[in-house]
Amino acid sequence: MVQMTPGDQAMVKAIPGNDQCCDCGMKNPQWASVSFGTVFCLDCSGVHRSLGVHISFVRSIAMDSWTPEQLTLMKLGGNQNCTSYLTSKGILPSTPIKQKYESDVAQLYKLCLKARAEGRPEPTVLPPPKNRSAYVPSNNSGGGGGGRPMTSISSHHSTNGGNKVEDPNGMERLTGESDEQYITRQTRLREEAKARMAAKFGGGGGGGMGGVGNGGGGGGGGRMGGVGSDPNYNPNSGYGMGVGGGGDLTTSVMSGLGSAFGALSTVATTVAA
Image (cartoon, rainbow, N blue to C red; front, side):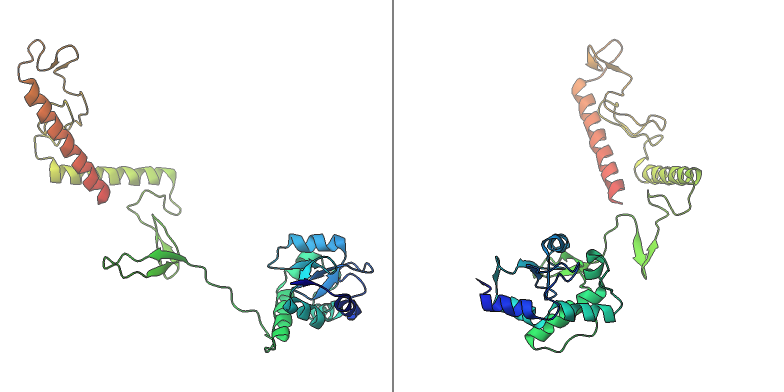
């Protein structure tokens, strides 16, 4: 990259329309858009920079370095060529800079100018936007690598032909569901889950779920016990060691631990289901 020679600067400034700013008409512009092959004043260059380099790549004619490819774009462009093209497509010179250069018309002109500089046929339409689908690693156990594109992720819904499919057995509110309907449905789902658990694990006298210190056994009249829920527990003497307690401490604690692990297994199975 090298700075423009005085000869190159004179050639760029001699291109029709380049004696004034492409956007506001101020005389003797010193800044350029490589993207559009145009020149403009200092004030308008600031607006061009704010658009981002993907829209308009700004350089100083006198102070910045230039590549041969960039110089070619400037020599094949020019304010008059750009303005004439945009006007023929309905984008007037008075159009605000942001609206003007972010338009599809301006973006197509930019591609045409680049194709002209590279000796390729000029496009007549913009290419379709690139598909930026996310990448999900393959789950193949063989370690063959590869992956698959992922278009969307949803923990509650699936799609069917592009339409969202709602899960009536899920936690998320259904479309059009009132508060009362939502609460009723969730209560029903909870009771059904409880019944399934009782049918599968609760065959011990009432379907109670014991915990540490629950006194073991599946009984308890449908009561769910937790840590220290045994009514015979005495905080001063422990399990079965108080007045009328009777029983062995080790046996009670081991029984309670067995019930606790059984409860954790039940919860894990339900969550996995």
